[in-house]
Image 1 (tube, rainbow, N blue to C red):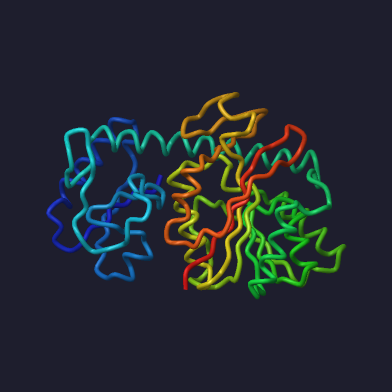
Image 2 (cartoon, rainbow, N blue to C red):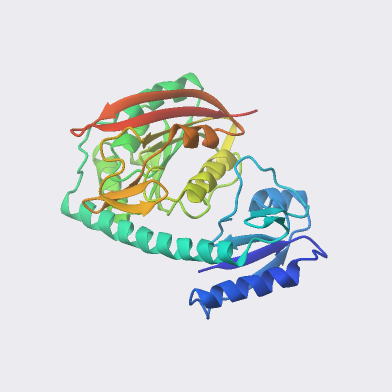
Length: 320
């Protein structure tokens, strides 16, 4: 577990933040974890790190106390606690953040293993035809004048291949190397390999792309995987970062009207597991929160598959 404390120069809470964090780590059994304290000195760095005040705690690069819509800035931070607003979170809050992250890591590892096995056992499991969401997205991307598309959670590539056949240059990412290998082979067979590049990537980590470097981003049922709400917010922030101004982001997510919502094995945070697959079911409030600092163009409800799965297709645009 990678743990950082970000502070501004001469922050009065620097030492007490480190002491509180060390106590929390010891109490949850992470005695050997190392903590790095970094000083943030400029607004550009604050924006790049998602730094919204001093001190900020980062656990594996994520701020467990992030507040949607709060701007980056070089100022003191105030935390809401059970005893009122304070310059530090409570010990209980830090313990809970560390415990939640450890649980999330275990669930993430299990999901990665599950998907690897699934793609190995069932090559091309979703077939050759693109999803209806991808067909719609291609039309929207064309209308927006997009030339290149980043697909997150591409799997074995049925949608990435469709985008390539539509003439887009495609960067396809997934945390399953097996799925991406199947995509690469299909791209060669369909003679679109020159239009598709692939990269193994866990969306819990920052995207390895420069700021404002892509025209459009697509993610079909990726955001509703076993991601915590803070991780989803961090991912959408990353999508905003890599999109060019005016760029379009289209994603789909199963929602709380789905028949599987509230059933199966609960993992908290509206995440439920069925048959080895964990899903974070989106509330309409979450969709709204994820559109902060975006233009929300459309929230369209639709059904897919045999259950059927009930989803929202969300289109939002990065402001100019």
